Image (tube, rainbow over all chains, first blue to last red; front, side):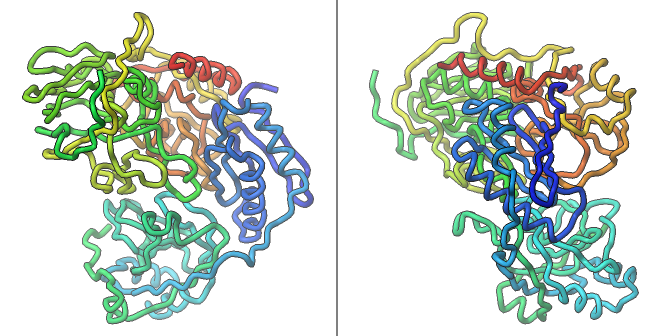
Length: 248
Length: 316
């Protein structure tokens, strides 16, 4: 095997698991090659098994749609030992119970002032703005991964008709609580940040109160349902109605 | 020498003038990548470790990461022993140059100024016992983008009037032996890289170019990522399904110009990668000024770990 690019394949019951070198002290566990809600049961199971197996030798474990990045402490084990431990841990892996994920109800004020791409996404989908809002709310989205920003959940899959590519030029400032669509994914910006997603509305639900909870609202495998509320309801909840200033 | 611990907020080091960027950092925020929280921490972790070592501090004690200098200046309200390592930012104590990679005493009435980079980019200033700063998610590392950490828990850099206090009493004063200590990179320095599986997707020509000619550090460089410019690298992958990003990952966006992802990188991302620089290479790159020529030098994960463990022994 050539250094650094070895790939190990181990047999699990129904999936082929590949382990690849990612960095000096990190290995990438690759479970799938496509995005699918059914993947989550396996990703969650692998996440739990690896956390358990590595224990204090685990520095970070970052699951995503199809992979898990295992960052281990190379003062406690070497490359070959880490590879062996992953192999051993994941052979005979069984999918987790995905029903265990939480269902989150997210009230959203859909309005052009805070969701400037409402008309654009509606037009592309051949829908009225009201129909678009109904469609966006009419689905329990799966949280595939957390990343980009603390508590930012990548959710999907959005109905094919609503799929809209990212803005050509990202906004420098997207308000906290902005709900957006990019291709077949939807997400909420936890804090004011730059971003290129098509923004449809705003929620006042805090996504990551690290001081209060220590962890974000969403976990991979959770389900999210958006619910349209009026400006009055949004304001009564303490929502910030300041319009999105910057236009793409 | 024994002084009482300085926990009195009225006795501190006060920022008299703010430079472009000075941040409170420790070794970083670990075990939170799955929450979408970035690692953070001292970009040149080797100089950071030396700074704490000089005062006999625990290796993870919070210190200041000072970028460029730019007139950043401090005055102290009580006598304090500080340690300065890393870049030579033309630091002066009451107008007299300070020796790099050593500790020194700052007295009330004296002014400590960081002027401009002469060698390297980031200096580290350590305090007795480490700086006092709120711990957020297990770390005092400051990340502006995530509004985490820092004196005011907003991730912001130091500003005029900020008052830094420290945890410890009189530190153990150590000296770095000649020939040891942090080395600032020279042009044409080598950055060891552990190759990843996606190298297979790059063309033979691109792989040859990647490792057989120097890359130029671009001015688009910060704690999140450092862009390298050179021949455009191409492969069969343009994007991948977003996956976890390790420290030092060398990602190749569609324009073919590598971006090395550093401490404040996003936790997951979807550009194909050549591999990842070793932590030692990341520390080197963190000190490279724009225009510096660097070489990507493949190394096995095992060799990189051996070098890393050897580096750690110097602080024993």
